Length: 325
Image (cartoon, rainbow, N blue to C red; front, side, top):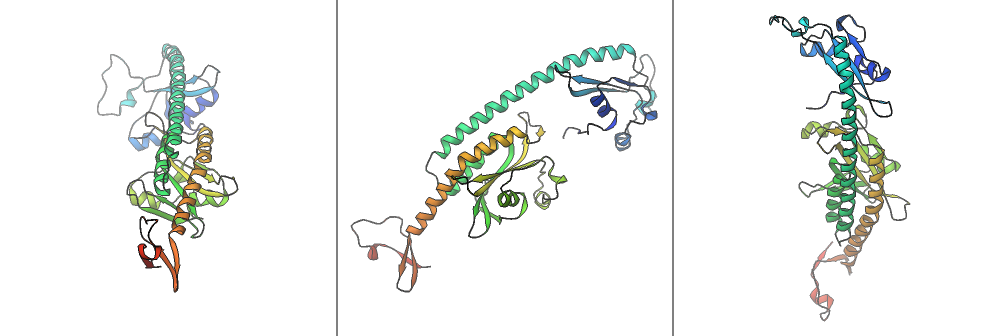
C-alpha cells in the first residue's frame, strides 16, 4: 500500500545513492552489503543485481535504478526451485543500457517535481483565497472553526486537520468535530496540541509512531493510521499569547502518496494562522459579549434572558422570559 522506504546508508541501494557509483553484483549472497531481510520475509531469492545512481542536472543523487536477477535466454527454468537461483550476471551491455535509461529517468523526475510544485502552489493560493472569502463573513465560533478546519486541510494537502481554541478558564483546548459537529475538549497541556499551545512552538513530526509524545490509542480505537503531524500555534492579534492550535495530520501529494510536512508547509501554515487568529479571537469575544448581554440579575441571584427578540416598546420585565441560573 505504501512505498518501500530505505535509509540512505542502508543496503546496496543506499551505498550506490551516497557514492554515486554503479554496482554490478554477480552473487548478492556473497556480498556483505546485501540485506537478506526482504528475501527472508518474502521467500524470494536474489542472486544477481545491478544498481545505477540517478543524478539530477546539478549532479546530486535523486534516486537509484535497481535491477534484480537477470534471467538467461534459451534455457529452461526449473520451476521447482526459486526463480532467482537460475539468474545470471548482468553484462556490460546491460550497464550501458541502464546508464542511458537513468538519464531519461532523471529528466522525468525533474519534470514531475516541477509539476508537483506548480500544483502545490496553485492549491495553496486557492486555499488561502477561499479562506479569506469565507472568514470575511460574520460567523459564530463553531461555524468559523469548521470553515477554517476545512480550508486548512486544502492549504497544506493534509488528510485531516483540527483547529483547537484555548479555553483559559477551563484550562482546555476545544474544537468541533467535522463529522458530527460535536464539541471536543482536551486538557490544554496534554498531547502534541497541548505542547504546541503551552510552549508556543511549531511541532513537525515526520513519523508519529516514532515519537513518544504521540498517543497510539486513538489510532487503535478508530483504525486510522497517523503518519505525519504538524502543529502550529495560533497567536492573538497583538501576537502576545496563544489563542489556539492548528493540527494537521498526514500530508499527501497531489496523487495521494504519503509525504512529510516540510519547511514550506510550516511557513504557509504560520501565515494561515496569523490571518485566522484575529478572526477567531474576534468571533469568540463577540460570542462572549452576546452571552453577557443576555444575562440580568434578579433580587435573589443571576437570571438569564431566553428570548430571541424583544420589542423596544415593551417593558423588559414583562417581555423577557427569565430562568434561574
